[in-house]
Image 1 (cartoon, rainbow, N blue to C red):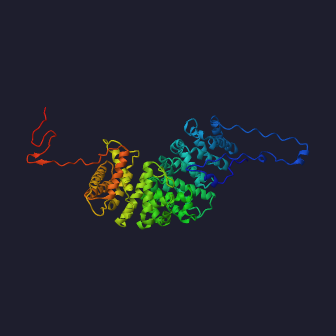
Image 2: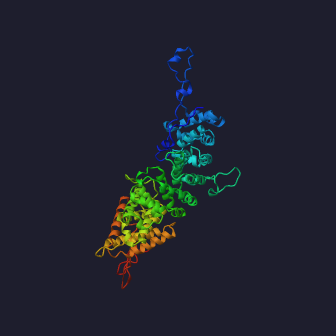
Image 3: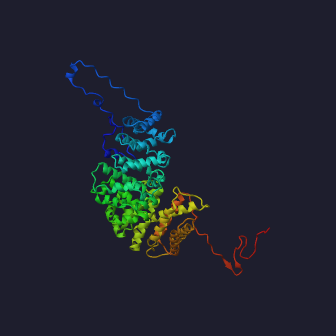
Length: 568
């Protein structure tokens, strides 16, 4: 039987991926000797034998119009005929036919997903392998992700991929990649991890109670992996891409709560502990890169951070912070989330402050810099939470340590995040921001401001009176009080904002250099954005009086009590 399986190794096939599925070249055509006898040399030519029939002309490439007949063959035939039809479906969406991928899934003309999902259950490796390749390619377009992960065939697709992983087939790594592609659609990550198959008519079983659920299948894959699997082997590739899938799925708190009750946190910590490669040599999408990402994503949620702390994550990733590159940034934020001591951060916390502050800036300004993650990789609430946790760690070890974090640009950025949310929430506010932060980001920014107050309110040396500091204190305090009154602000954030406002307002009598400069940077930002500069200026005014009583009770009453008002 002719095999359509690719001769390339799994590692080679997988590593050409950037963010999503590696696109495979078409499976090799059979060699000439597979279709007939090889040339037997000159001696054979001297014999008078009938000439072999000419090789059949190559079949024409498939078109979208062929899909109905191909799907019929896939579902009604078995063995080689079914595999050949599956191969043609794969060719329709391979790297040379990217334009077909969205129509094949989203046009509504055909259901290619259900037959491909059924092919995943075949005992024949050829049909199963080709179905995996086709599903991988179809899972790349954003439009297709929603249909495949949330549409009518989602149960069959996710179930078929999960079954291949559970049975530890050689295509397991391809199934992990396909699921990882689908999980780039954030709306799908809860649905994917909640996959918990039961027999028809049976009552639903929670994922953690079902050994056939996706989360338990992934846990089994990681726990049964050798401590140092051979690089490029089927087992190592399966574990690697499973960690890539878990990285995406761990972005939601609901999913993190499930992961925290499994052995997966311990497994990813062990992946880092057992590696022999230095962090500087970890490539994107490597097992170590994925594992550190999983640790970071799980560490930010209280429901899963304890599992990482129990696995000794801080001691394992702490040395990575000194790398100072992308891996160092992830390790720094993870250590902040995991309540690492301030002394654990290298060089007095200055590199940690700089890297996380730059990340916040990249996200808010929707940009990226060489050697840093672009704004789309992390959510703003992840970066602001990391900065808040760094500030809390600093102040708990001594108020003087907050100076490393309370740079004017960082303080101004925190003020910007909070004020942008306030302007978005206040109906009568004019102007706005290119980036409207979420409520969690603003809450973490307020928490960072509160923790950095010892440095923000540090007096000038020598002390002096400053009108600019008084103005800055009044405006910042008013903005924080306005924020505390916004509907939906948590009780913790309200208390933090009010406490910070009181301390800042009380400190406005003398010069506070960091507060002044931070306020000036914040004001410049609002000017650039066309935001109202009087939005947070207090309107409270005193009432002048003389021996006749209150002055200017009405706008047309003068100090002598005479009026020019006409009352109708």
